[in-house]
Image 1: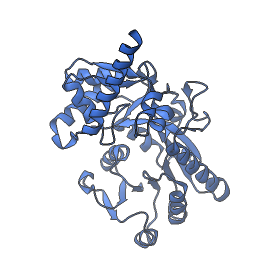
Image 2: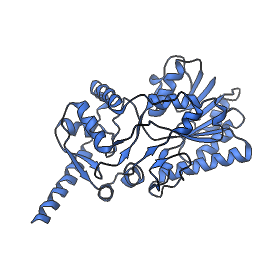
Image 3: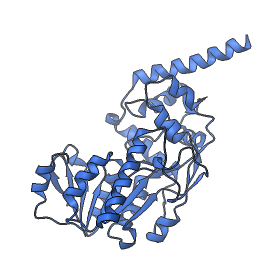
Image 4: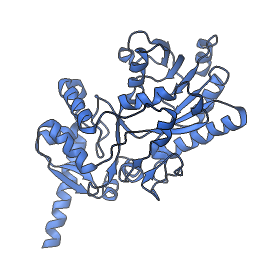
Length: 338
């Protein structure tokens, strides 16, 4: 198989790249070369900015692929560019959409690929929906061989997956735990959530590559394990070897008092219970199974981050904001009680 990845070094794509490098796949990665050190041996790089359409067209003029996958497209104009570049150069075009595109709030917590796409809370999700609609039109009108993939909350060893964090990443929450400071959990922490290790996601994705039954289809790839946010934070605290000191705060309150996009990230995503039915994926990829249990994957992530100080990016502004929110809640309780 000859494949081209646009991107290829992010959280989702890096595990796919690693696994394909160990198989008989002629893999090319098209990016600006900023993270080339993350690429395994044998992967070939086409160094260019995908937004420089003329330059990319020149570089791939004599090339054709079995699969082209775009991991970094977020708006329809980027897919229009991809269509112009690859309409005659690939047997399958794979677009990474998002499970946050599914109906929000849900009418049924069990999500299948037939669940309606609608998210009034998050522009990111609406853009992904528009991207899907464009590709479906190209498939129906012109036979463009698309496969749409919808990941949910996928994580790797470089970042701790969380619900509430600042713009500089998630390490500050872990640091608060290590310092025995209270950490914020949105809502009451009892809604269900699904997290998927990127190694498991990669197995499903590779099974869809070159799969004739996946052409024209949309498929989500997630774990079958669902946990509450309280359990997630307990797992993180346990991996850090500390006792969790949790403060529960309404998602709407967090959105109202923050400049972060909690309307999208919480109200339009993580504040809602999500349980995925992976029957379609397992029909298309019969040997797929997510084997990394969250507590196991999280422990590996925590160990890796603790061993790599460069991944421990502090966020003093978020830290101060957490203290301010928690003080405000304490003051409100005291005021009501008199």
